[in-house]
Each structure stands twice: as C-alpha cells, then as structure tokens.
Length: 307
Image (cartoon, rainbow, N blue to C red; front, side, top):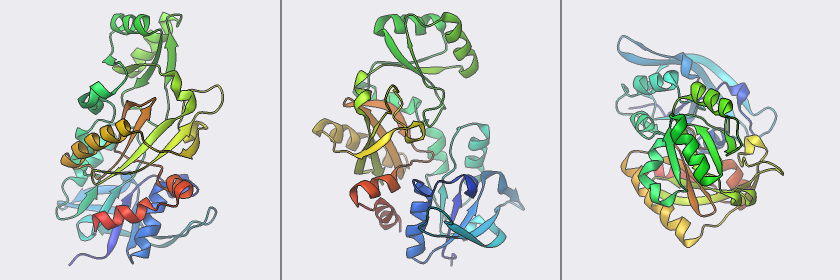
C-alpha cells in the first residue's frame, strides 16, 4: 500500500510567492485531506538501481504570506511509494525539463499531474495549431523573408519564443522595426511564433482554467498602462472574468482534447474572443488569484476530481 504522500517537483521554496502561488494553494488543500507533502527540486531526482529517487524535504505549508512553510525532515525517497506527483517547476521548457519528464515516466502506478509524456507532446505554443481556426492569424517560422512578409501584411505583430513563458522575451514589432533587430531575435530563438496584434489586449485577456477536461473558471488580466503584456508577473492586474458563449464553446473543445491527451490541469488564454495560442500545461497558475476574486476554490475541485 502506498504512503499518503504527495510529492511536488518545483522551484526552490524560497522562489515561491505565497500571495499568488498555485503550487502552495494546491498543497494547502492536500494537507486538509491529511496528505504529507514531500517537496523536491528537479535537479534532485535520479535513477539508481532502476528506481526513481528524489532528495528533498517533508514540508508543512501555512496560509501565511510571510512564514509560509516549515521543513520537518530532509529525506531521499523512492517516488514509486507516493500517491501523487505534481510537476510544478516553471519553464523554460528546455532539455533539462524534458529530461525530468523521461525520468518521471519510468515511475509506474503513481498518478503524475500533468502526465510527463503529455507535457512533452503538448508543446504549449505549437500545440495550439490544432485550434488554428479559433486564433488570430499566426505563423511559426525562422525565415526572415516569411516573417517580414507577415509583418507587412498585419502592420503590428507580436513575436514570441516558442518555448518562452511568463511574458518573457515577447516583442511588439511593426513595419518600421529594424531588420537587424529581427535577425538577432531569430538568431537567438530559432523558430518563433508571430501573431497578428490584437489592440483589445488593452482591456485584458481571459485566462480560462481547465481541470480534467472541464472549464471551471476564468480571470481577466489587464496590462498596466502603456504595456501590451497581461501577465501578472509583468504588472497585469487580475479581475474576475465571464466567458462569452463562443469562448465557452471553444474552451470546451480545447478541454476535451486536452483530457484525451492526458492533460489534467491547464490554462488557456483569449484576447478579444480569440484563442491566443498559449496552451499552458507545464505549470498552470492563477488558481489562488481566482479564489481571491470569486471565492471559488479550484484547488478543492482539483483534488476532488483527482482522488
């Protein structure tokens, strides 16, 4: 019989922001269900004697914005002996991230959220091409001529690294953008995502939460004045959001597809009613913010659906 333990693979505890962190929010709810929390960093898993081991800490979390955790004991454990593993480290989705998914995939009989193979298969931006008809005009390319032609057609274009996250390295370019700047950007990031700019972003985007294939809530994130980035890490302000009939319809389509592909927790984004092409599966966030705005505890729904 497995121990009543939930293992969390995440960033350093000191990097977590208890005011907004979804990982802590999920852990607090798990503790209410009498689970012990074992927390480790991705660099601290290994395969030894064909077992997946992790060095980390048994941690108790508290609903506090200051002293929000205590470490009870440091251990090396066999991850096959826990009941659930939450993959919660932030991107970048690089080779180190991919390596951890291969290691986790060796574990049998443990529910891992999100499924490590599914995380690899559902590339957060490229995967969105399945839903292209619901998106603004978008291309993925590393060819300067194709990108310049796209910019010429749409006048204002958002460019993003395909494996970027958190609003980092996103640029707004136009027909006057220096060609050398574009060349350097492509040289640094390789294939990039280029998308027609939607000026409606000034009124905010909508982040939709999907748990086990179902649409369970949404928030809006409004960029700070003069910015086109709605990410809260970039100064965006969160508000409660309600979906239009069409946004709900598209969200359900995406949700069913993600469930079929073993994605349990995801976040998708709309701007001006258009799916913006970010299918967040590596470490979806926003559940704590949604709770504070709506009173709806999606962490409770998460565990009720899972257990």
